[in-house]
Length: 132
Image (cartoon, rainbow, N blue to C red):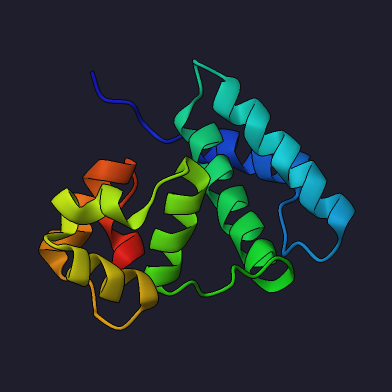
C-alpha cells in the first residue's frame, strides 16, 4: 500500500496555518505549539508531516538568529560533563589511556582523537561529535 501526497489537502493546511518566516516571539511560540500538536498526532497524514517539517525549519531559523548556541570547545564539553556527573580526571583514565593524556585533554592541550571521542561518547551517553 502506497501513501500518496494530497496537494489539495496540503494547500488547505497551508491556508489554515499560513506558515511564514518567524519574526516575533509570539509567532515562534505559536509555531512550537503547532509542531507539538502535530508530533503528538499518532495518525499524522503525509501532508501534516510536510507542514510539520516546514514549521521546524522556520523554528530552527528563528532559533539560530535569536538563541544562538555558543561554540563549545571539545575539552570544555569534557569539563562540563565531568562536573555535571561529579567525576574527577582519574575517572577518565580507562577511557583516554593515561593520567597524562587525561590531564592534557581536559586542559585543552591535546586534541581528542576519533577513537577517544567515540569512547567518551559511549561513556557519557552522548554523540562523539561533541568531542571533535
